[in-house]
Image (cartoon, rainbow, N blue to C red):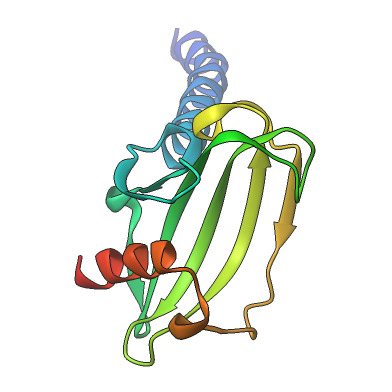
Length: 148
């Protein structure tokens, strides 16, 4: 009887563990993905584009601030990928020196960063942009993030 009980337990455990690991990984991917973010509107540009930041995902580490932003275009933006209606950017900010580095960007043909990215670019973490050389709309985002 003891062998039967042990054998049954050994067969059920892998099945339970597989389900548990799958659920854990799925939840981690879904809820950490920027496409499931809660975007807060922080500004707009003269062309009708809207800027958003996911304030729930702002992280501070080693004196830097990291955050996701989203730009939603009113009309398709053709400069990067044909028919781009939105793009997401993961940014590192040095609030003390007023500079930032775009670590990655993804471009979408659907509004609000929905769908699969049409193009994905990795930035150079050694390249820093000065706030003085950026559009004022992005400066507003950086000020929001640094004061958060």
